[in-house]
Amino acid sequence: MATETGVATDHVTRLRALDTCAVSDALDALGRSGAVLGLHSVTGRHRLAGRAVTIDLVEAGTVASPRHLGTAAIDASGPGDVLVVAHHGRPNVSGWGGVLSTGARQAGIEGVIVDGAVRDVDEATDLGLPVFALTGVPVTARGRVVERAWNVDVELAGVPVRPGDFVLADGSGVVVVPAAEIETVLVKAEAVAAKERAMVAKVREGLPMVEVMGADYENLLKG
Figure (cartoon, helix red, strand yellow):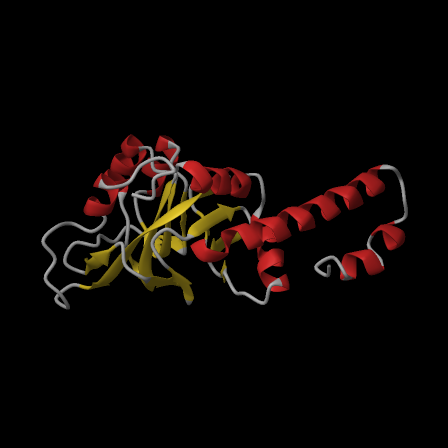
């Protein structure tokens, strides 16, 4: 869906080289929000980066859905894409499952982020598919939630996500960067990461921590 070509390829490559903390710091420095709170990897130590292909779920009976949730998005997606499922924080029913994970893996999709519960976690883990979610649960979506639409604007734990926005996830959580601001955020995040690497080098040289993490650290986001 979000084909990884040209400038977009470069942006994803640069994003992959960063961690969510540096990107969150950059967003802070620019006065932007983007950190998604409460979600974590349920499939082990994974990180992922790519462009968002969105899916919005609602309670069954709310809308008529002609297909099982997530299937159209999987069929239209591939390498460089991250499926972002707006499950609206539901902890008691899955918004993603094992057959979908197999399809996503087969398509080369980078991973899946679900604002709510997922199931078949062991299956996704065995597949090596990164899945970030609120929690795991065995309860099926069938008869409980359906797809309202895909490739539409959604919210992920209160953070707006539009199709084609950039997403990064690792052990610290999930961040979303609007596509229109990716270059600005990357430049700032790369500067933050460079300053932190310099501090780590000083620590390894044996400098006192008070000196390493003094005024320089408190002013890390300035300039």
